[in-house]
Structure formats: structure tokens, C-alpha cells
Image 1 (spheres, rainbow, N blue to C red):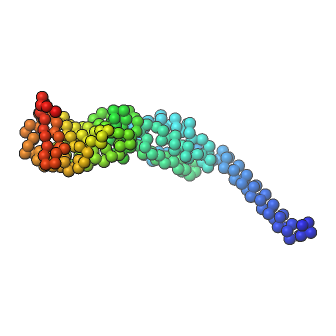
Image 2 (tube, helix red, strand yellow):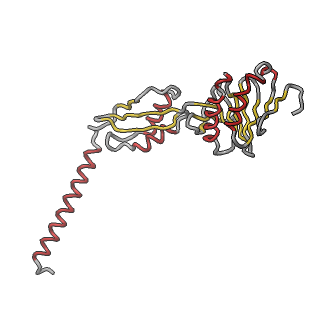
Image 3 (spheres, helix red, strand yellow):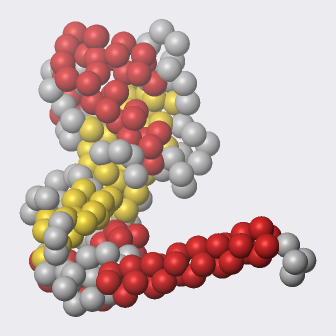
Length: 234
């Protein structure tokens, strides 16, 4: 092998090339860590409505480290997303010395099982409760299903000029709606929207006059419904 000059030259060239690459990698790593590339600013795309400036600053202090090139963007993103009311965050570098942070907050749609909130995407999150929200009551993992039906039934109720104050999905998957007037509507387990639409259509001719005294309406009949007044048998 030592007499093979072509092979020796090839090996020497290979070793030289590897050495050059290692030197370049070391030089690049050194340059990237120089103090000439510090992170000086963290810019928010828009000011959050519910996340405090103090909470954001705390995340920056604890989760954002390194310089413009070495900062761990994923760690920073995860740190921001641990804050209450934060749904999703994107973090990107902004040349030459900053980060740009886009915070998407939860928009609370309802209270969830009295212990949490549900947003407009049907996602459950934990944050300080909000007044004047309807109550969603459902089984684990059913928040999106409840949210969708809430939207559909709310549109159906528009002619009655009443709103849903509570919508419930029982362990047996039966639906119940309580209106802001106090009236409770039993919708059952199927054709919920059709049953409610049928009720809304006949409401002006049947219960509109006595709506304030009707306690519960059972819509689980094929061609009609039952209305219960205070003191009547349920």
C-alpha cells in the first residue's frame, strides 16, 4: 500500500478535507457564540388582552437564553404556551438582535363542567372564570361536540329571541338545553336540531303567552311535545 502513490495522495486529500471541515465547523460555532450577536429585544406581534406583561417577561427571563443564533426557539415557545389564556404561540428570529413572538389567546365561549373553560374551537383550558358565559356540561373529550351543537341550536333559537344558558350531554348521551328565560328543553339523543326547529316553529302559537310560567318542555316525541308548568308532575 505504501508504494501506491495514488492511494496515498487520495488518503492525504481526504484527511486534509476532513481537517478543513472540522476547522470551519469550530470557527462557525465560535463566531455564533460571540457577544456581537446578543438578543436585545423580544417583540410581540400584538398586545395580548388577558396575558399580563409580567407573566411574559418571566418566561423571557427563564426560557430565553443564548444569542441570536443559539436561542432555543422551541423551548421559548413551550414556555409561553404554559401561561393561562395562551392557546398557541409562534417564535421566530428577527434580524439582527431580536425575537418576534405571536401570541394567540383563548377566546372563552363557555364554562366547562363548572371547573374550566371551553374556547371557540371546542378546546378545554384552565383559567380564571368569566362571568356571563353559558355553561357546558358534558363527558370527557366531548367539548368539541357540545360546542358544535351549541352553535347549531343557537342559530335555530334566533326566532324565539332567547339564548342558551346551559347545554348538557348526559352520560347516556341525551341532550338538554336551558334557556335564559329558565325554560328547560329535553332534546333526547337524536335529531336534536330538527326537534328544536319544530318547537321554535310552533312556539308563537302555543307557549309564547305563558312562556314565563313554563318550566320544562319535553321534545322527545315524534309529532309533538309536552310542557310542564310549576307544580305539575314531571
